Image (cartoon, rainbow, N blue to C red):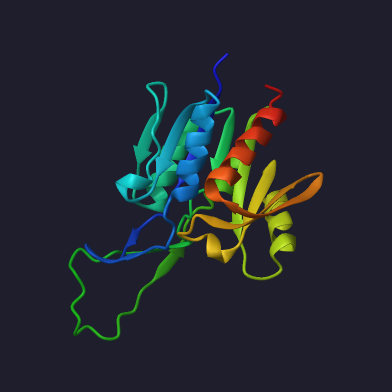
Length: 213
């Protein structure tokens, strides 16, 4: 019996004008590690990724697909399309929290100073989709916090209707190793310092047990 996993990965870029954007330092390394770990366990994968270096993309088989997007709205659109087909969804993308209300069609000149921007919040994709999940569908989120980390992650898991959330530390951005905690309804497990490959393997192993496969 095939198992299908949807993974959201990488950053999103919210363009202010044709060359400038709001984004973050996410490299997509964790998403790629998750996809590679899932592939090793014979999962079929839909991998939605924001703009990352080609070397950070996973190597997938013929039963799996990579869907490339740029903005938060594009990621939401693509995620909605594939969410219904997934047994498990991993929200590992670092989606921008805000997007320009009216991007400029022309590049802002350096002399235009100051520039006033109106920003609107983007849709919280993890919360939006997890509230629509089917009975046996599993959704896992990721949280990066700088203070009151575990308390905030627990609150996010409940508010977003996630089965579990993986808490990581700020040093995880763009790096291969960081501290992680797995948090679910039974409490938390401190995985301490792990590289992203090892963390991804632990996550996929837990998912297999959760689905009793």
